[in-house]
Length: 533
Image 1 (tube, rainbow, N blue to C red):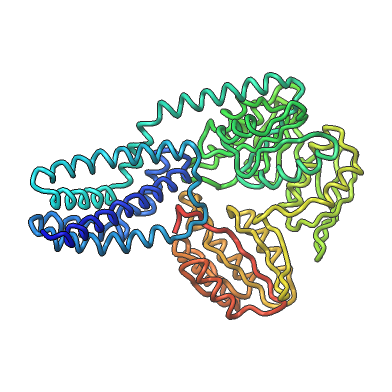
Image 2: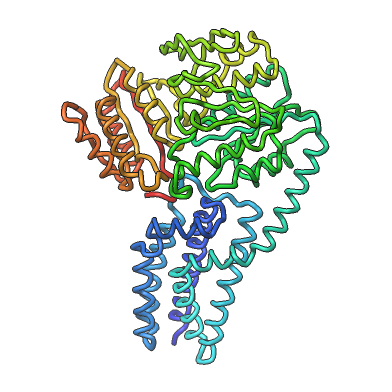
């Protein structure tokens, strides 16, 4: 075999290895988005069909041909080169909504993945070297392609191998967080949980309480035990007076685990709804999990719960003082919102309860934001924040990105951005805001709602029916919920809505650009993560 051919073999092998490295990084990104939990990752594999994607099936075909034409390396290497070049270019050039974050844990897992792959590739090379160097290079390319085809197995193996080490590291960090909290006996910890609304409520409460206290809140979506631990270790200061702790959950026991660490004195339950039903299985399990926060409160603590949701209103609380609030269900609510008026400047309303009558104005819009503000105001009053400071803070609260915030472009188009984590209640409220817009045409761009378990189709169908009554143009993105949403839209017989479908948000934006005009309003409702099509 001449030198040129050997160099070509080496080049193709390098392409195959690069393709493998890119695929392992993508698999690890998906593992990260599934909280490094193998069971969630495998659930994603089953639902997404990633193990039998077109690219992987083609790779398997090329691998099979390589075995069939085992004694004709030139043809096999040509096929491997063509496939791996195209695959590597696609993987490296693809943009993700939530790209891989290179944390120390990710670096450990990726290094382990590389070591496992290197061992298999080295064995392949040695086996080929018994014949000659070109055969060794060929074996290396084939081994790299084979690992690409079963990269999910490599990812899972690395995670499982590192579990004892990760547990030891997490325990060390946990103990450090406990030590920090034990050194701050006067710290007031406020827990916030709910199927939706918890992040917005956290931001509003932080802004109001900052008028009187030094306040720390969990940043971003640091709402898992590890996220809370990281917040305490990296952001807690000796002079912090109030810690607002957002508590998320995907399964029963998640919130109790956080409570056992931070020991909240005040707990807010913003909602109990059909979110994450794929993992919770039933709405009763969602209720049980969210109220783990209330159950963990001390006898002299305070629970603040939202009666607008039936599975909150029906949950008896007798272990601690409980203040109920509501906007639409006020029968047993101690605090309610009255005189709610929406206009271009935002919302004006009055919070009434327990002798208080506080007129407020906010830049925020939507019933959900009024509800979240009530919860924040109740807690602020319980901590003796003066009413004038509450009014000032509420007036200054900025809209939380991607959570029903509104802005106007220089071209005269109004954008309602509700792209974060859509749910049945929030999406209906967002559509009500869209329906209130009277000038121009009203557009909604959405891929629908996810993680709703067996109710997924029916809830998206109802969402479609709601769209038909609130919008003039609907652009349904992707395939995941398309059939349900379009069926729901079509079920409303007297609607004049125009329906478009688009494979991606990029395609939807291109379509929108060609038809949008000054004075129109666009609602962006949800944006599916990379784990959904």
